[in-house]
Length: 366
Image (tube, rainbow, N blue to C red; front, side):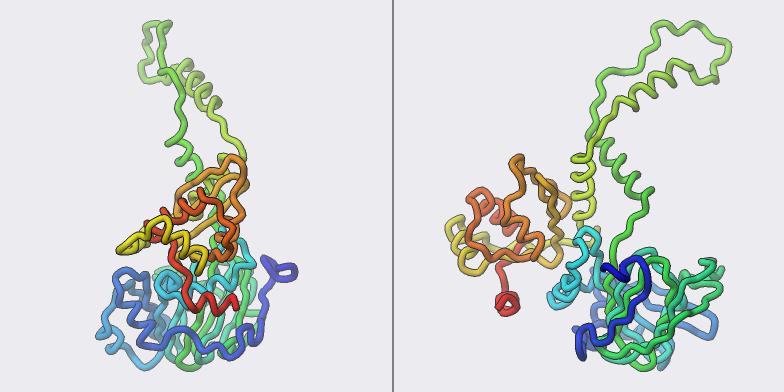
């Protein structure tokens, strides 16, 4: 973070020694066939590129050639606990910036062409090998008539072959071209980088739902006019006064960001438990095993509020330490939990936002 973040590409050999991956070929292609999973298929024929969006069928893959294609599956962390744990190994970056884990499966020659991303990315190599060429570009002009954002001209500064466990970090706008040398998997850890226009637009859209300015425009002194099409100057002035009366502060912006950045994606749904434990039973479960955030949940916090899956819960005296631990570690193991927080956690458990900690998580802590 000190030396490379937002500055330069960095190759990290054996970041996860001999990483064997989380999915085999059938596993990743099976996810690409799921209608609840976002997936893409990219096929290259010479200089021509073809792009299709899932869901697919296994017959679609059986008809493909032996080389030069790749399948990309977005948000694998939403569907696989092991993928969620891998994604959160990158919690040294604030969770508000963390996006998702994408897995690409490619046959020899497969790739998506020379391109750049507007966000930071870590590219972790799973089984197989991929050759990466990377470099800053004098121009980000794109090839016309191509369904992918492929650079018109690409000049690379570095060329590396990544083997299982190797990882490449790339800052925003750093062009890269990865080509599979044999059947291979790449795990892409991506980060959110909303534009200023997007953030401002979303903030003002949210603000519009909360403002309440009294009064209504009136013009009792309006004389008869021969210029009916002209905007009345008093109307312009009155509107300017109304807009200037809108106020917001840093706390309003923090609440907006917490809600906006924790909002689940449109295709994300939660699975409430068939039976919700009684308050006493839940308290014992919490003390004995602890709870963990569901892999689809996003929990953030500010000085006096927590933000869970697009909802804001305020704490006038400050956020309880137990909830900060849950947000930071995505699990809560302490038994020192105030009664009000236990009740809140039970409500989240009933909504499917929390689960009891698994044996695997307990082993990880040990």
